[in-house]
Length: 404
Image 1 (cartoon, rainbow, N blue to C red):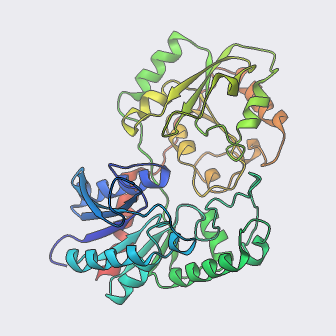
Image 2: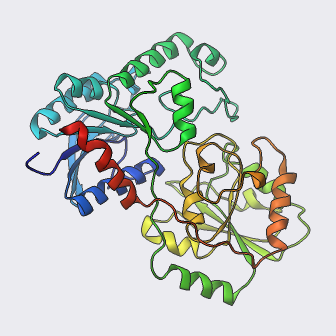
């Protein structure tokens, strides 16, 4: 290939309209591919703005990456949310105009599986990177309507009757998404758990690999700032980023810290909602300790947040595919109290013996909290974790042979 590869990257959101962990991964890897390897990246994402014409396309640019934003119509059918002919037509035109060397599909809900078929028709190799369980579950996170984790392993669509609005439509969706996966050249997963569950549920085993997500590593000034804060106030600070939902374990946190019997610590809650609506004083009223709310922060403020906490609370009540915050904390010498929640456990130094079981009551979380409070100075050493630069380098090794 005479010139650097040109990748057409699909993700439901992309800068300047960023939201969610998978979007952060897609953006960070794309920027590393441009910065470190000289690759060219063009993104396609979506918006839903009533002030703009449906299916018009806006072009933006951030950090040297052009983003073609397709404005979706607000009223879309069930099927259009996974296979939208209007979007596929727009993508066909973009592929013809841009002539990329490879299609890299990340989270393509609302973009749709038609993109994969269109790429194959044009002889374009396709890499699909699975970040969540949208490909197995119409609710994306295998979360039942009552807020509980589904727990199927493997996922069988006929066992989804209790959740699916219309099982016939869900069967059709399941079959069509699986056929689309079979049209790709490579499917990547961020963890062994995600790959194993997907393959057991019907994904092709060959051509499926674990491509571990990266993180932003701590900056040069992080550990000095962390040490200075700890020297100023030796009280432990617990941090929680998950929001006030059952699936992220908030009721467990609230119960564990209510009636704890001591207050020699602080707590920091992050409101990562778009409209700062997650936390009201009523949500954490009655909990021991001094709890405060910090507004949603940008990635550039990551070190500032982690320098403020000593223990990350991660009591997720579903089997997640990765667990970005767990690895960010571990890389910064912060203790992690977590559940045995799938891909979140696959980091160097993770201790399965100390992990809470999904579904356990607040007594186990309280035990781990007290264990930390009784040894406030027992801060762990930082753990070496894959960075986004490492992840981008790994992608070059995976993708280059497909473009030969």
